[in-house]
Image 1 (cartoon, rainbow, N blue to C red):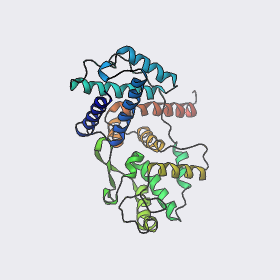
Image 2: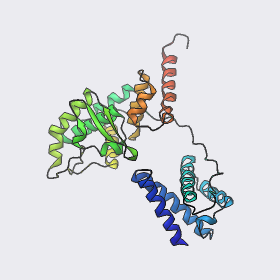
Image 3: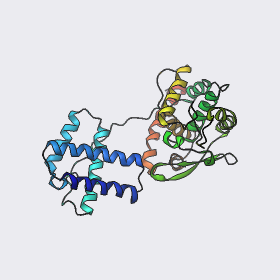
Image 4: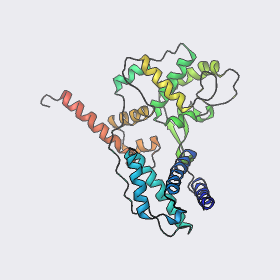
Length: 299
């Protein structure tokens, strides 16, 4: 029975990769969620995916909530299993989808963190561009803020992806989707200095064309970006921690605050759905209220 379940899982993962064109990162999340459910099935002595009933799913959800998982995490696991069973139904490997009746818990409405323009100025000032690493850090910071790209997308950028004449970068996004994103003069100046000076010194004997490199000359990783950003914050006059997505949030918020339309921001961010971009309207409304309360004589 376990062999049959593994075959079903293998077929599903191939479907995600070939038909849906999902990224490896997304596929790994699906695989992890399904493996976790298989472990639950083993504990409950359930022999196959076809034997799972609605009440088994309810027991599984109770176990998830008992682990104090965030609602967002529980919702993702339910969504993964629902999609998996839809595939099994399509392939006639099961007769019903026991997850179809389960309501996905609504996630907490958390507004994304972002920097105010005055705060961001302090962050940029913390970069010491007299050193190769400082030039890299400044270029990294400027590009992330100028484009709003994801950190994973930033780490994949290669030198041929940059068009310094048109001031655009070719971004390889989720699901192997590509988009061109423009950047401004501040990012261009920082990139040119880094490419012509700092990158050459850091690269040493490594012969790759990744734009951003670590202190050993190898390609920079997402974890490395996180470490760099935190070190910049530590050197600035700001308190607290920074997470890489804050610059993406800041990019979107500042554009909307300064009059950009929602569709444009959606395209720049690479969001498949406008609803993903609309969260920033809550941030900008909060910003507008703050400005009103600060400056209106009768606020």
